[in-house]
Length: 560
Image (cartoon, rainbow, N blue to C red; front, side, top):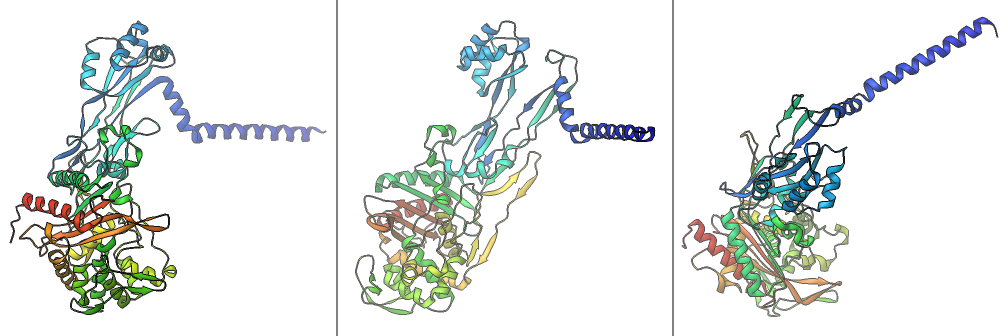
């Protein structure tokens, strides 16, 4: 090999080595720069997180529903402790900690800072401070507090710990608005010596936390308390297994109250079955029964297919293939009007209406009211039962859907659909939160949102009068508060079990709004498997009227 070749090979090897060195430097200084800087900083600094204060939740009047109470993170700085055993015994005794485990943690020379317990209340912190122990520290760490106890638990949700032990909202508002509520944590960064102890005169950096935002709700705590008290009374009186009440402002879609039974205490959520965490008003489906008749009737009137005075012959059951559709009490009235169909709650009459609409129009109207998809309410646990595909609807399905059987809805879907009859035909997007306030005083309003104009205002007025007649002349007229015009409709739906309906198990319901001329609220009451009576007119309706009477008193609305 001549000298030229050797020189070329040597030069090439030099270039290759130089190139590898450049690539390595590029990797260190560019690609891994952040990682190496953090590693270097970790050798010189110790960092502590300062939790942000979670935002409060207020009712429509500014009354606190969820706030924070003073609490503390208790921690130990190991290298400042002279007698670890004595320290562990004294602190562990107050905090009920395992002493051997605590001694082991404090003896680990690689740990400069040892968190002992989160969310410690002021009473215990005061007791710990009286011990005057070197190396024992405290950092403010707000804890969720519920001044109204377990009120609206399933609406609010709760705050638990994530996989890293940090606060996180779960379910309801706490889950849906978690990012807004939790804010941004702060940081304390202290320079440390070679042994890991903070330097008294070393560099110190503090980044204050940015506290979470406050939610202001449409909910009125007085109305919520009325609803929860009356629901508990109704569950006991009628022997129901479950129940729910939801009240909306029909003009805005704002949730004024929402309650379900059974519920739980969000301040002690871990003591309850997890199945109670979800909110049945938005997460559970049911067959609406005769309350659905109001919507199908409104669709037929809106398409000019019937009027309140249109006559039909209710002379007996309607045969659909091998099946017979009968009235709920197997009584028939001969020639009746569309208004009387609602008064008598006639299933046979609704089959007449459904066939006037026809399959395509009926399905289009059902979808137009928002069934088959979520309402987009601002609660974490909303779900929506799916409608069967259009090509799978048989004649019997169309007929039974007209009176609310064979179709599944959620309570929030049902009450907001009926709200369109109370507000001139506008389908609103329901909302729990009215506005958001940040820690600096900025207010972010959440304006009412109209999803669609589902029926004409004139249709809404007509159906309202038909619903008023259904209340005044229907089976539940005995329970109605005297002197008030209330538009409403009862519902009794059998519960499907193992592919068939159980005649002994029903969901009783009542939906309505008042005052009928200028509705201030729309409310849906549902009771699952009431034992005193299976009929909505004898259970859900009286409960509806009891709550309505309380609302009239609260708002100062006199009888006419």
